[in-house]
Length: 396
Image (cartoon, rainbow, N blue to C red; front, side, top):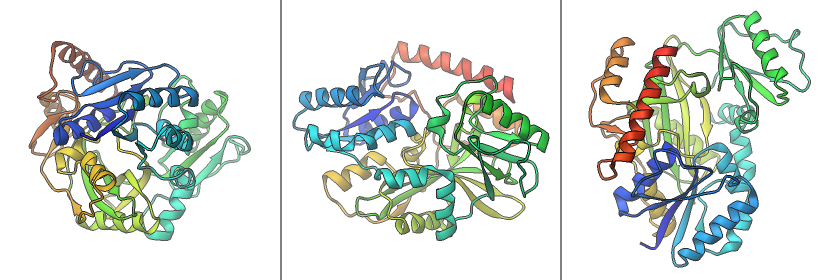
């Protein structure tokens, strides 16, 4: 093949991208990581390179130059598997393009990234183009007074950082990705703990959506270089990860075809002239009977293996767009699937425990592709399963 995927980061997100390339084209994907991680290590579909300083501009350019020299006649399609890796690529876009003309970067520019990445400016776009979003208020740790801060909507509420990359640089006891807050006293206590860590950026304080464990969804879309949405798919969260630092992530996801809301997302993305991969975290409010968008990530999601299982191959969409210059018709993926990090028996236990009525179909594991199994991978998968089960029982 005259092309290859290159992913910054080595977790399950990256492995799903590698599976998409392998299942369509039978080629390896290059993984650039800081350290070896399962599931991309010990894999026959991944070619791995590691450097603990990957997030430095100099190191990134050196590693990409090395890869370009090794494969001088191949186009390299760049992906970031986290927000900070996507920002890293965008920040170095001009330098990357100077290495050679072999790099394809299907990601928005820095201005649009910052607009969509900030919850505040993203919600302003939602207001302008008709996507429902939770009411919110901003708390600025650099100038707002905790004791005088009030919210105008009812408790419980949910709070989270407006910039997750900045927030990732701070560590403190009790740190979570986001916090469900039940009353004013709890809000002030939580904000005080965060402020004492030295954090000086902003948090978004938003109304709590009246959903249940089975009303959370993720929608993923691919938008062409000409700003036309080519495909959308959706998944229903079946099993949540409730460990403090991973709350908001999920361990299993199933089919959730929704034509009406998919078309709303399509309209939004084309209005803002987006390009590349994105996914939306969405919840259905069972009282107001509406879908609400919480955030938009400018990359494929952590669990993007579900897009492949649903019939939407992100690798093929990008290759058709940038390599073969095809103008494919828009579609909404609609295959039955159940994609899980955990074994089927554990998923069944979780569904039963939460009284979730769901029939498991077309079951797939994130890390155990049938064409990529060996003893080392089985061993790491067993360790992973044990860790997830322990945390599940601890926090549920």
